[in-house]
Image (cartoon, rainbow, N blue to C red; front, side, top):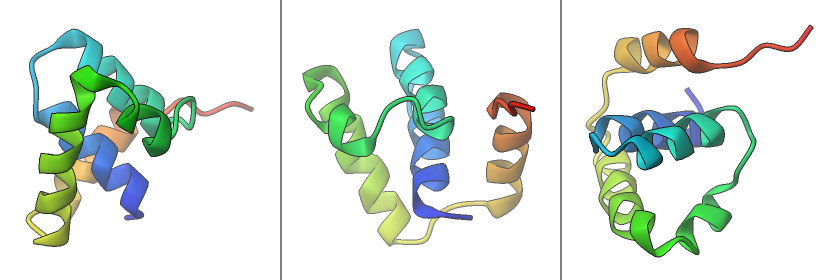
Length: 76
């Protein structure tokens, strides 16, 4: 799994806030960048936590894959 996908997954799982979850899905689909999210004050704290979890490698790759299968938009 790439870094952005893992960040999107962890961000989605880190909050019950619908706005944050929508931003995580947008990040997964490439509609928004991590840099853009870092400018959003309401998401900054979540991103710091998520990035530290990612550095500690505390992530279940199978759960990330299920997240991608559920939320990634595929354009044909």
